[in-house]
Length: 398
Image 1 (tube, one colour):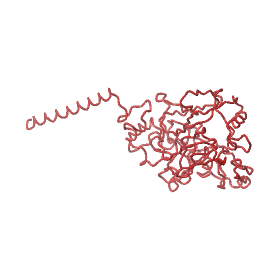
Image 2 (cartoon, helix red, strand yellow; image 1 turned 90 degrees about the horizontal axis):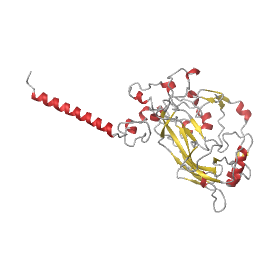
Image 3 (cartoon, one colour; image 1 turned 180 degrees about the vertical axis):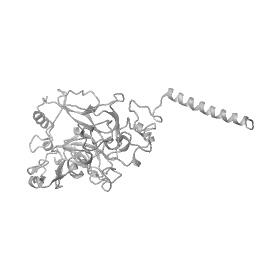
Image 4 (spheres, helix red, strand yellow; image 1 turned 45 degrees about the horizontal axis):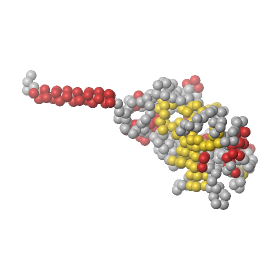
């Protein structure tokens, strides 16, 4: 995979990754101008991909550094071993292309075609019939633990990432965990847009986008995942009486034989929907015109134009609904001495507490199993005591 190696490209927030080929005032009305890229210069600087070239887009997904994924941000440009054992800049120094072998940007390991369970084992790179080269198993095999062999039993049901990525957003860059569009539109006393920041300089409110909740060193949520991802489409009817509307749903269960326990980032939100047609909405946000929400802060104008552009009916009535989106976590792999320990899961309030389809000693209580276990322990103790007493009584006798 080849990229622009000039190092000048930066993904503009709000343009969906589209490059700027003509000077553009953005955001509209701000007086700030995004300079157009020099295509002739870029054509002379095409080369191999790197963490920087891939990261120019993928570190900034969702509107800013670390916003979307939680396990990908600019801290991975030159990480230390503690942040990612594979991409360690002074160690293995993997680039994205080391794992994500690709042709024409058809990327192995894409979140659109994920491999949740890889049973094919380690294989040679370039052997395209062997499956996805971006899985942990493709290098480490299905029995990766050489000294603690019992741990390989865990590898039959736990994705490697579950233990080896104890937290995400560990590189000092916060990720967004909640985005509330319903509070957008506020202006100050002079009618100007508002921006609020926390003590670390993170934007927590913006008139164009609403309120944000950000976090670092986040413990993942854990789910059964079989690689199937279903998305709520613009034409799908939604139930506004539900506590939350899922933008995507990760398929999987403890009994389907295809799933493993995976760590995910659960991204909460609140966004507009059509209260009559019961569908989600695509508002017109960015644009140097009077209907773009980021310029005029008027939802009805922005929604009407956005829905017309997407070819979807709009009733003229809207409200806001709570939403949820799940992102599998697979980067920021910690060194093995920083992976989860036994008690992280095998305890009353462990990492996997509440996950269906599992029974873990030390975490789950079952009266019958506990009674049988304590009964066997008591019988063992009585046998040992009885044996000791008999030895004392018969000592000195043949």
